[in-house]
Length: 493
Picture (cartoon, rainbow, N blue to C red):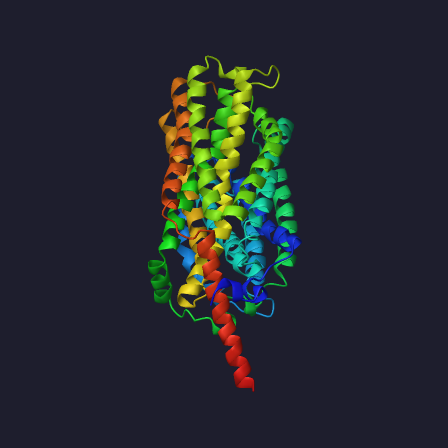
């Protein structure tokens, strides 16, 4: 059956704009906790008294644990069916667990020194369970929100705007307000930061629940009543092994996520702005300056995705991100005095830095946001191919990627800063620039993110779910639903 004869209302189910905007806030809620945990190294080493490399290892181990439990969480999501839907109960439980965990984490210093290590490990494990529940629901929920190729990219527009709020305004809040208020990463700073994150994340979670409420129904799960049941872990493994597009997107997304995480790492930001440029507050100010250009980049990539498909938009953004990160290296090799990059006397170096920062953060971060609606594409592709609806498992696969990659990021940062002479404490704004620190910074802030994006773009070249292919996928799903409806009507007669 051709696309032209299919009933558009049967083929596509759509959401209102506000529903997409509200549900996207679920990802913003979890991103707030990512932002908060990004400063955990300073709390654990500076206040709880744990060694730098040990802290990095703990963060990595906790995130790896989260990856190990992800298949179970995916199975739970796929099997969950309540009067409140499939995704809303998961989101609520995930948010509550995450709130409890961050309170536990940032009160570790109150315990006797001998118990702190065990307690913070336990708290991180609890945190990863809650985080994985909520973030997996974000990814899997895209399948029920909308299947219209022109609507799915709108997630990126909302998520891009919200991420600017979290990571740019958030960095300004920490660097220009909290650090200025408390003088350094003190306990007072962390109390205020934790309280702010919990309040905002809770509000965003409630709005997300409202956004998905009318679409969280069985009729939107795969083929509805005709969906093939996936009964065992072995069935899930067969699905993963047989879905080449899932494998390619997984590889590409993991490398993109690693590069983006390294580029935004809190320690790397301190090294870049606080030590190399000599003004940590500049990170927040320049972040605010790049808000509008960043939004324009987000809208450009979203428009490109709606017009040409998610795959092409992903590739375009990734390549621009690679070139932008690499361009930083000759800039700092040429500059005799990096502190000339300043807003007090704006010169050509400052202008170039701001432009590169805008392009690297904007285009380099775009693929990470595009991945979420692409997960829904891969899930629909599997439904069309096998009749199975395993959005929960697919969502947790990418949650596992988030955690695995996030586990590598602090490990990479921790070992590199230890190798350049910071084995007992992370570099802070009071440290001076040395040749080894300069080299380590160039590798962490620019070279590694560029290499990661390069690998991501290479993998995406082999990914086949472009705009045309996804239209075929939705035709197949609509045809299967249409046959089921005809059979039901015939049986009723």
